[in-house]
Image (cartoon, rainbow, N blue to C red; front, side, top):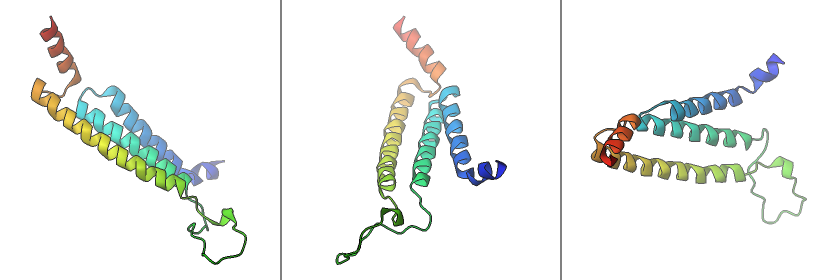
Length: 127
């Protein structure tokens, strides 16, 4: 049992990374720390999906043009998880860029990126 748990150490690393990111998003009041937590969470998910796509003793899915043999799918790595994670990386980078731009605009307007202070300033301005 212990050997099985230890053999799946990569999944434990992803769980720890996801929980660190989730904790930062939920508990921190600084918007930059929340953004860093979101990025850690997204990275953990991407690493998880990439590790699912790994297959031992498999080859790349390029079949010779003039091959007349039957294709054995078990011998090839599935490229779909890797391709999808490339897309996820692009989305993660663009999301982080937009969030950083929003943080700059929030800082210019409120002179802080602390969530509690921003909410207090908004309440004072609305009253």
